[in-house]
Length: 299
Picture 1: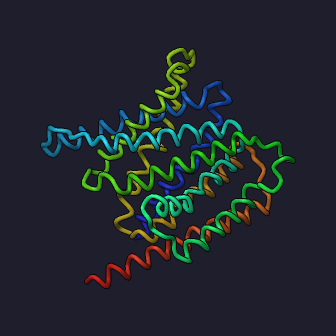
Picture 2: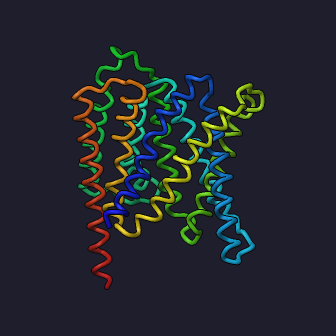
Picture 3: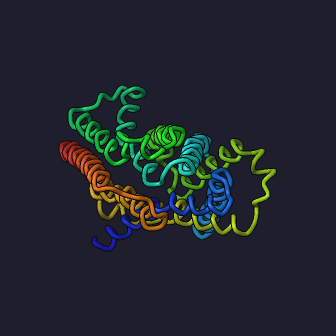
C-alpha cells in the first residue's frame, strides 16, 4: 500500500509545480496562450496515442466520441488558461492559494445547480478554508505588496471554471475508459484555448523548438503523469486517503514558487496554508467516512 501512496502523492506534486515553470517560460518571452495551448495540444496527442495503442492491443478498432466530455473539456481549458494568465500578474504561490477555493465552490455549485444542501461540516470547513486563504494569500495587505487585482480576479475565475469542470465531469462519462475520457476532455481543452487565442497563436513568432520543449514538459507533468498515477494508486488506497494526498498540490506549488522563483513566504502565510490543508483534509475524511457508512448500510 505504501507504494501506491507514493504514486498518488507524486501525481499531486506533479500538478503543483507547473505554475512555477510556466512563469519561467513567460520570462523567456512566451505568452500564457502559447504555453497553455502547446501543453493541451501535446497532451492531447500523447493521450490519444495511448488510447489508440491500447485499443489496437485489445482488438478494438472503433472510437466512440462522447461530445459531452469534449464540451466539458472546454471548462478545463478555459480554467487552465485563466490560471496560467493570472500567474503572469501575481505570485504563483498566491495563484494556487486562490485556485484551491474549488473545495468550497464545489459545495456551493452543487447546492445551486443540484439542490444538494451543504451540511454543518461542509459549512464550517468552507469558513476555515476562506479564513486560511486570507492569511495564506496575505489578502489583508494587498497594497503593500503591489498585488494585481486583475491577477486575483483571474485566479478566482480559474477556480470557478475548474469547479464547474470537476462538478459536471463527475456526472459525465462514467462508462468511458479513463484514458479515453482524459483524451476527450484534453481535446476540448485544446480547442477552447486555441479559439480564445486564435489570432495571437496564428500570428505568433514564438512557435519554435523552445515552445515545443515547454509544451512537452508541461503536458507530461500536467496532463499525462497525474492521471496515470491517480488511476494506478487511487483504487488501491481508497477515496479518503487519495483526497488527502491530493492536497499536496498546494504546498508543492507554494514551495516550488519559493525555491524556483524566489517568492517570499511569511510565517503567517504558512499558518494560513496549514489551516486550509487541515480544513480540506477534514472535509474529505468526513465525506469518505459518510460514504463508507452509507455503503455499509446497503450491504
